[in-house]
Image 1 (cartoon, helix red, strand yellow):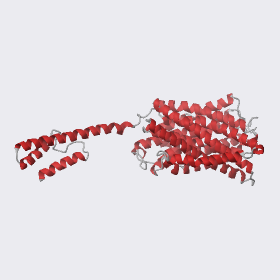
Image 2 (tube, rainbow, N blue to C red):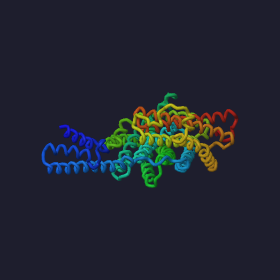
Image 3 (cartoon, rainbow, N blue to C red):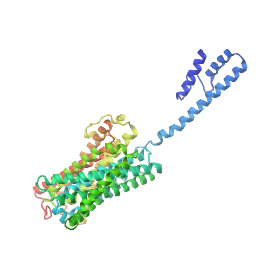
Image 4 (cartoon, one colour):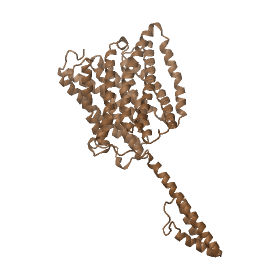
Length: 505
């Protein structure tokens, strides 16, 4: 019985997944052979002993070989999605700065459009449209940049390598952002009505319908176009071995602002002209968009990649919209005093949101790669650390933060002088204006990058996926900080006497 138990223990060790034979056993079966031999002796004949030895050795050798083959097959899959070696400064700078410049030019274009349309009749009569501007521009942070971050993480982990995975992710995520865009667009119009009209104590039903319909159509169309662009960028990034975390969110910003402001201005103007002749148009648009919402929600719920986000991803999107709307109130109040603020508002907000989205996306990807949701990796054991550590530590995310901070001043100089070269805006670039404007921009990005580091790690410890929640809050905070700091900069310039003929035209 003792020998039988010994053999059973040895076989059990193999079956339980032990990679090496037990101590005292060799692959040749020395100790096993001894046990088999004793067992055979108990049963009698030498022939039986030889037969049993051969069978036992063959069985153990086969099990051992099968176990090792299985381990060898499993090892590549475990490392399959291991991310590439840590990028150096030049790689990060090149991959981020080029899309950053492209994005910045898109923001400049958005600023030029806003500078022109602020004089349109619809913006003068229905000034609450200005409140919609940051909220709808913030959709690229709430929806498109979140989509880019989510898909970048999936791509880096290897979950977009087959056409079946790609189509499932594409259909589910496009349905999700359509559902979210319609809901957020509707809520943004409600917020614009409340924030714009309650202080004045008046309400105009035609203007309310115009705000609601404009917001819904703009949010839906812009989100669909940008969603398609995001998916194409991420798939192309993987094909050309570029980290999608570095390029996806900047490119989302490059087109997002321009498309959104152009659509909002055009649709609002058309609906304003239709108030007297086709009063049924705005209610029809609102009804059609709201009827489509359950369909998009149903598609999301059928998709394994988005059904969880559909139920848990509303809080950051809605709260971020409200934060951006506060920035819209600031814009509505200050644009009446300083016309020059309109052309710079999309630029300063876009640059801050763009850079912080890159950092948040990279931190989120590293947490997904190196840790389990709810447990921080060993290199990120603390959540609240001082700003010096966030920006001055060696390597890692601190190095990325330094690279991103280094882009703020040259980026804003390029964008500001592009605006000046095109003779746009109502403010000339005097030296004191440039200095004050750059100080505001640096403060904004510094605060955003620090908040991003703390927020993403805190969310991870609370088992909240930062891919779905962090970027909406961060870009909305960027909108609020950018608009607020820009308004303070213009007010400070006015107080100290930098009042050229263009300021506050």
